[in-house]
Length: 216
Image (cartoon, rainbow, N blue to C red; front, top):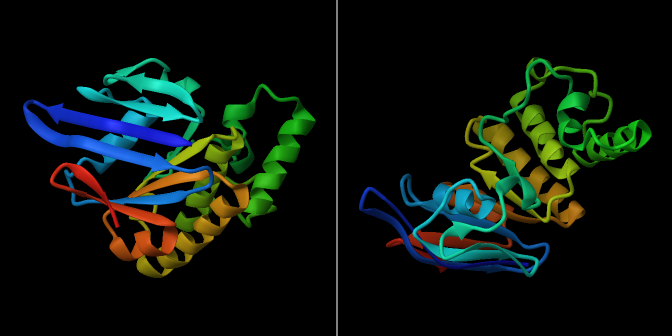
């Protein structure tokens, strides 16, 4: 499903990753661990097409997206969704408008049906008219997840999405998001520095050590 080979990323002669390799099957949930500055977010951004590398290739579902460090498919065409730490919801838009932002091309009924199904999936039916500031942090993160899933991505990348939540809310949301992704059958990568979080969330866990990925 996903193949990343021989990824090498450097910034101003500082080698961040050197020989990073990762292969995932369809539906896998993978967690990428590493200390701050270890290159885990850079690996995620390369896969997403947001950052170039000195060397490396990435293929998704048999299609080459980047080769020799250069992107052959732009980020917006990769069928990859992203969920961020800060939720990145539009504050002036309702929950419905936020979730449907990437599917405005659909007919009205089809769009409404899809948003309803996603709200049901994330366990937040009935909040479509609310605005982000009216939601808790956990609710905002689930809405952010629904927005990413609305475009039916082949791969979902989650960049430390739980780190801004307090521990009690975070522990529960980690389990809930895993269940949502398993129900949706979406191949996913979580970037985190929290080993306990990674173990609960993922089917497979990898650690960046000495600029390379070690699968635990």
